[in-house]
Length: 306
Ligand SMILES: NC(=O)c1ccc[n+]([C@@H]2O[C@H](COP(=O)([O-])OP(=O)(O)OC[C@H]3O[C@@H](n4cnc5c(N)ncnc54)[C@H](OP(=O)(O)O)[C@@H]3O)[C@@H](O)[C@H]2O)c1
Image 1 (cartoon, rainbow, N blue to C red):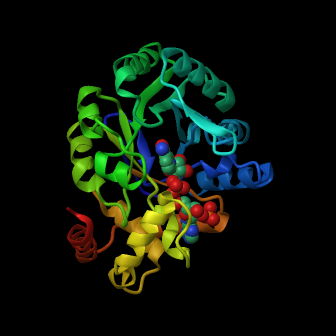
Image 2: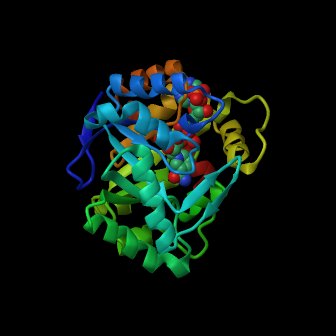
């Protein structure tokens, strides 16, 4: 698997990373998660993204992969806790960030966390203090690098998470973290103009979440809720089959993301061994022909660009 320099971190990351949100699910067995996590490393993936709010994800990564820690970089998060079944809550106070870090270090069985990210943007009144704490834990050597996971205003609004008065690009300029995670995919291309240019200018490592837009085109009916429903509507409107020509849509979608020169690593969020192998195989085919990328961008801009 191709690797590339990751911003100014000095790390090299595989183009495909594993998004380990599903790997914390309690309805998936430990044995299965252990196999998928190890398969990811065996396939050459060296980047795993997790969070305390992803159920048992951190704990399982610690349990099943700590003997292979020299083979991968792990990025976790703070600021968002609980989970979808117990209810999520947001807390960016100093106390919560520090306690969150301790919990992640314990579950991941790590003295030093590789990448510690805000799981979204802290509320405006806590922004200054929260970033101070983030840089403080880096200064103390408890984490190697710090980052943020947040979309620009238009992509966030589309994903149903409006950022209010905060603009991710402006926040990135003000607080020079090492890495930034954001949504970018064939259905939601907003980051290409509202975020990626700023992140490149700042030499931040770039991490794409939802690179496959949750494969929404697989659903016959509109999925419930705006989170999947709105991408599904766009997928219906866009001439995806025509743009992909005779390529499977999932391959087209993943290679589209990886064709962007400003994208370092794309996190595929699969719990399936078969899909993981498939995604890696797709990624290894390299960027799409320029003409295909151009048509996909032009089509998106003409339909949703204003
Ligand atoms: N706020 C945040 O910071 C935030 C938010 C969202 C996501 N993320 C990160 O980004 C990661 C990825 O995001 P995501 O899981 O929402 O989006 P995604 O990777 O775009 O989509 C995941 C979905 O795609 C399916 N899939 C993957 N490969 C496939 C294939 N070859 N064929 C068919 N289906 C396939 C998976 O199903 P199967 O499991 O059945 O393969 C899963 O339902 C997360 O795990 C997390 O690490 C972060």
